[in-house]
Image (cartoon, rainbow, N blue to C red; front, side, top):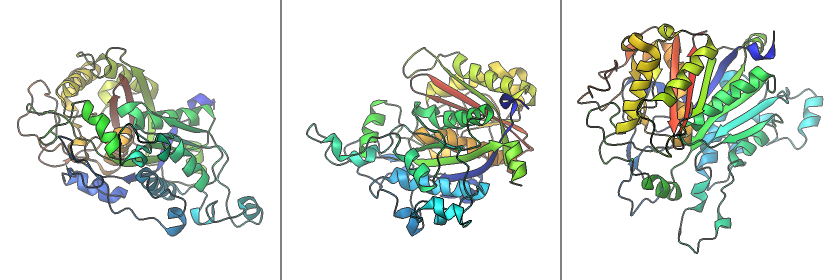
Length: 418
């Protein structure tokens, strides 16, 4: 089989979010329509006009992992927790208790037959908007020495590769709010090209005073609830978290007898080349990535069962994404339920696309579409079917997960039931 024709499976998932720090807790909360947003207390946001969003708490890690993490970088805590979950579910042939964090000489341990080697072609592809910017928190005046913090965008990627002794390709993307989905799509490309056998991919970001200063300048945050597709929507709310998946080829998963959670069969990626923050009103950019992803997947528009939308709750985004879905799916769009889980978890910045991709896979696995909450008056221009009263039980075989970001970046991922 040519390398380019390899089918890519999702075999592991891990999550840290405002709705829970494991997959099952997160999924149960989504289906229950739980609102995970509120006052931010994890860092000092005094002086900012809006101080509500979604924060993470209660992460626990074993001592051998905690010993590897920089204590003032909450990103590292979130990423390592999510990666550990994903690796464990995928059953990758490595045990962190035997890996480099405890072994003075991992090579000798392998030779002695005490530790199965994780293949050298295991890639790590992460995405983030702010990386470890939280380590700069404190006095943000002009006198602040930048060297006191750590703005290295590769820090978490290198940390994970070091902890699990991975020597494959490492990449860190920063494509604004489309970053998490782009990391997963790029990871699939590495599998198909033969440059990696396994890929640990996804996004992360943490709320910090430093990051909040930049987010506030966008003037997209609301003082109200986050209300995607509602006529009275007034903006988005930002959150923190991490969403990580393990990708590998079907052949690899079958050889390892690993559970294939879903197939990642399509990836579309482009740029609007229109405006730094605003999308074109006809939705062409995101429509093009949806069409690109469906074409790569070999899936016709009428085969789509669900769209997990970017759904930020801003006036323009929700209108343009609705227009894009109609453009791509045609009349079938009115038979395809859509949802925005941001209504419950907020906008997870660099992790948004990967967390929403995980929700898409869970929708396929469970035959249930989570609701969009906080909708009190539907926008007549956003007239696609949206479950709001509770989850919608529906057999879902094909899901499109959309992400868009500042700078005009758009990503669409297509997942299919295995």
